[in-house]
Image 1 (cartoon, chains in turn cyan, brown):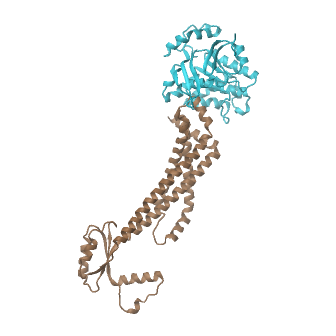
Image 2 (tube, chains in turn brown, purple):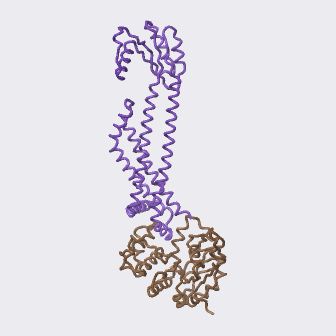
Image 3 (cartoon, each protein chain N blue to C red):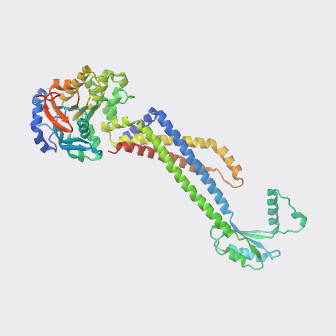
Length: 267
Length: 296
């Protein structure tokens, strides 16, 4: 989908993180035959965030995520995962350092460009954030309506993502009539409907039982295989350890580990 | 652009009915505030009409000595009429003056003994209406200088000045009260609409997260505010239309002879003021309320 995106302005950062990025992805069969140079979805350089109340949420974070990567962000509560996500969607601005998302320097982005950035970044939350009075189909269509998409393009795009997440049959139901897993799939469909370059999932399985959690993870993996970069913050140790993907561990606002591995540090 | 407008209006309509209780609360508040505003406008315009009526009464009156030849009186009238400050000159002869006086006595319910004297004690007079009640110019001097014709000039200047300063004060006070009430109304309406917006905070958050531009978030709410304002104004005007008859009667008995009319003009003015204030308050209230969610 977006893997063929050519180079972007963050070139110097690529060099500093290239080794890591290569490590993280060499084992992925789906990516191996894509020989073309990959773009960078997310790049953070020396990023620190201090909130106005003096709390230091992130310190000197460096992170490079190439297009098509699948990354787990782990760490205890308060380690800075949520702040990191807020920086990526420009809900917060870094106190210092550079944040590049989909080729844009987030902190230099003019206000009116922010909505455009957010359409490149689909986001999924633990609590789904669905509108209770809208059907599954309308919840997904809402994301297109409020961004001024022409009506004739909304219908097909919605049906396409509903088919992708497997909710075509439930399209006319309200969120309250769905299971937690189905609600989360609706939220994922909404995050995908703009065909974003990156999908960020903040504890997407936090409210779900283990079996349903696996369904959601499978769905995110599938989305990743189709070419979308996926960044998933989670506490779900079982999933992280079993998948052996790239794991970025945060502690007290610092990156303490970045590489293929399990949820916990391995000695 | 058209799609955007249709989208905004449709969402405003949906939003209004989805939160019906909040919307109705805002509409009722708006109606009460507009009624207050309209009451003030009616009161002020009534007061203004009264003041203008009183000011029109201002005139200079010169009493004519009995037995003055008509030619000298006519000459004096012509002389006064030529003055630039003068709007109108009336001559009231002894007969008319007596008739007026008798009428006043009757109106006050006092016994009239004038017919028993057999003579007419009331002098003839010249009544001068001024173009501007503030500007006397040489009117009084001209009248006083007519020796042998004018016995006395009614000295009303300082009375009129006092009256004018009171009416000026009342007008200013009216405008000040209107502005204060307007500001209060704005605060109350903004606060009520803010409640309606806060109830939809989640929806606004989702819109921001999926990349809706500020205009797409803001305008549906502004249209919703305008709808509240429009409904409030319509309700207010409806109530006023129903109440116009009894109020008009009440005022008529209260003020008596002062001609305050609830005429076409005032009605049009009210439609404009109430409609304009409703729309402006609703739109502005929504604008201010949504702004807090957009600034980051």
